[in-house]
Length: 479
Image 1 (cartoon, rainbow, N blue to C red):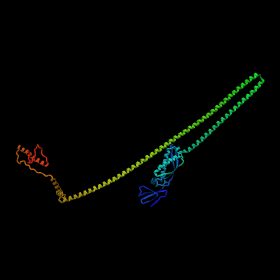
Image 2: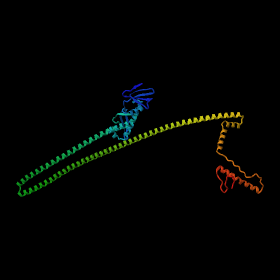
Image 3: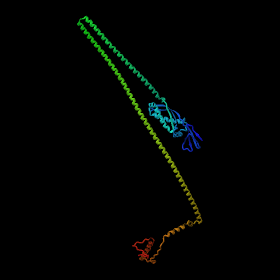
């Protein structure tokens, strides 16, 4: 039958004529083949991941991930078709798989960051989670189309963000109180300075007025004395009064000058003291600002170095794991190939051994049957000759041609000998006497036997006796 998938679907076909699986939009389904149809549209997964920062502070991270098959990579589609396609995308199996990957990577990343870093670097934290989760989802042929990380939420019993908001509010209120007190202090100091200046100016005017009045009074008295008294008395009185007036005036001027100088010194000291206080406050704030800046720079640098080293270590670990898995897979395949080859060789050797065993068995059975037949024949032949074993043996030798072969072999052996027969006589035949003559005759008989013996050896082998024993001639006599 002919099957056609919709635009957002794929056919997965297996069976006869297909080595692994076949992905197609439309195809003929033949007998012995099976197929399923899976949807490629992405699905939204909503999670509330509970994690813990490096300060052991738990928090909730609400997140929404839009995940689906990677449609631009045929290899990823094959992975998805093999591992996920048989399950409903909204089933608990797929959701738990995705949730497990997301929670694991989120917790590992959050454990390496402080709460402040997680809160302030939400964008970077989201990107890190996105990349690590995508790396794990690649092995299932899945792709994250969108990831939305919501605002961090407190875990019940751990109101970190609530306390952080209260802390911010209290800091703002305290800063406002400090500013109000500072403004009130400046107003009171300015008011007191204005009152002091007013009193000093009024005292100065009063002193000048008194001096002017005293002077006028002295002039009037002096005129009256000049009129009523004698010139000398008038002059003495005048001088005394003038001296007294001058002394009094000098005394008052000295007091006024002292008060003016004291007021000026106090005002200068107050200004210098306030200036020193403000300068100290400015320097303290500058030191705090520089300290915070240096702490932030060192903390940022240390965090970046730590993250870089963590990423490098993770990447190196991942490469080593993949290399180890590849080597293990290769060795497993080599072991399987060797095992299959050994099984084939064993089977071949077993077949050869079985063949040889069968041939030997049949040969032994043939020999056994032949022996049985020959035994039966011999028993029948022995019965025919009346149990005479010699007659049966002669019959068997005649029947097999053995006598003819023996005669032929003997004839061939005698053909190359060409024997020569020599007859010698030693004139014996006489009876011997006893005693010394009998013994001498025996010795003489031995010496007479030597010439024919040497002659025969010479004729048969070509060897001659040594010269000290004698020589051979044609008359067969010895010298």
